[in-house]
Length: 259
Image (cartoon, rainbow, N blue to C red; front, side, top):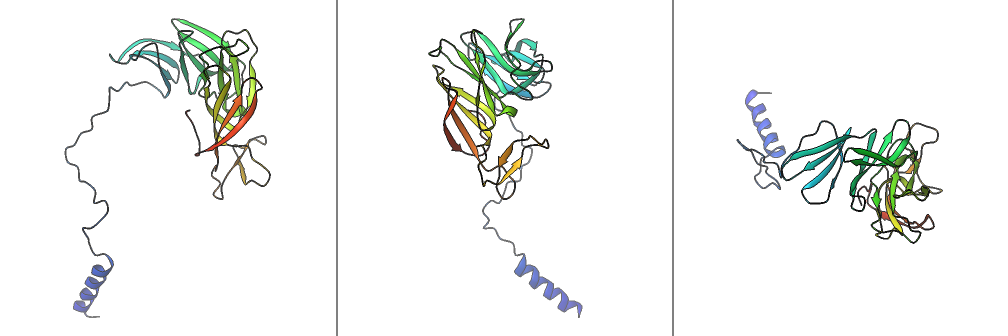
């Protein structure tokens, strides 16, 4: 092929196959000497942050870190105090309880397993322990006593597919109720009558469902999945705390967390 003919053909291919155009949906932006200003005041911690909760005022903030609980004046960006956890923190497992005037933390202690503890003011008090193994979720507390006289906290036990119902005054034994797969967060009614629990892994499998194991152990839970092997359900379980029974299973989006 002659050189001139080759270049003519190449020009035709480029023009027809890769023609430039200015009418594109998103032409993009070329940035030059631009800076980003963070929203708010950043506070740096050593290690992962697992949860945050306001205290008695809008300026008082508690931060659940990998090894410690920090007490901050967030307006002044100043640390007021810090306390060693004594275990591994749960996921978003921190709440300030107005009745007890102290932060509560869900964590896993090496010796006593999952526990709920109040930490702060240079003291650490275990409210319940030996609740399970592996991982605690985002718990909630009732604002008022229930019809049995208990003011309860409901703590998700992620690996056990249960929640622990804990009497915050320690007068009644801890009770348990079943949930969906991998419960994450809980929201308790003000009077402690019911709790809504989000389930990471969705509903329990039924006959005919396509499932996959959540781990390598022979006893690992089987989660409902789609044809790709991806978890395909997300649910919220409504539990009557008087009877410890599920009253409703609500279908929501995949992998629900905070509630």
